[in-house]
Image (cartoon, rainbow, N blue to C red):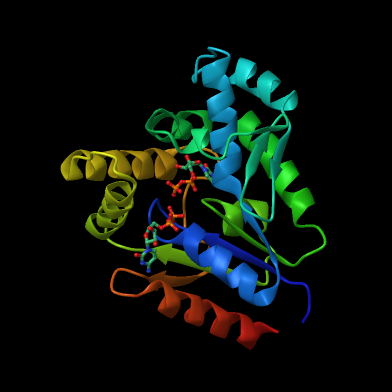
Length: 219
Ligand code: CDP
Ligand code: CDP
């Protein structure tokens, strides 16, 4: 198969990472979780007590930061495995502030474009189809109602034994989506040439099958 790039964007809980990982495995492509990169920087900013609104400090911090994503889905920050820590509630609720700064986004974009330069990637995030890989051969925008996305996250938390208030979780998701959609630089947005899949009523397998069908049509 040709080494194409596949861009998958959408709001929190739309199923991007679950589906992107499966598509990558089926195609023997590399999965790139760009959200994990913003989360890793946010985690490091917490450790270094850097204000999330201080763009200059955050950008300096990022320039001095190594983020590695492994094929097994692990995230290494300056050589340390932070895969668990970057999913904390604290990081989740702050990451969209860090990700709003244009200089931070520019540095991330350069790194992400380098990762995809040889093709053969499935990259998920918010601005992949619009900014990072505007020439990706396949662009998909996954959506689902906020109720359904909150329900999915709630079930994940239940399975992990994390006590969760459903309404609060739903509000937090809606707020993060709003910040991601309203920022000035590379907001969460469907690319004009992306195919939207509303996953509200779909199983993971159905979404994976739809994407593989789109890929087959393009290659
Ligand atoms: O997994 P979940 O959908 O909760 O979020 P994520 O993909 O891990 O992304 C976390 C946050 O990083 C998002 O809410 C955005 O603020 C930011 N992000 C971004 O701005 N651009 C990307 N390409 C990916 C993530
Ligand atoms: O990466 P993103 O935030 O878009 O979502 P995710 O972390 O891949 O998916 C959130 C949860 O929804 C996971 O527990 C998935 O198993 C579940 N899911 C689902 O139930 N049905 C789908 N069609 C897609 C995801």
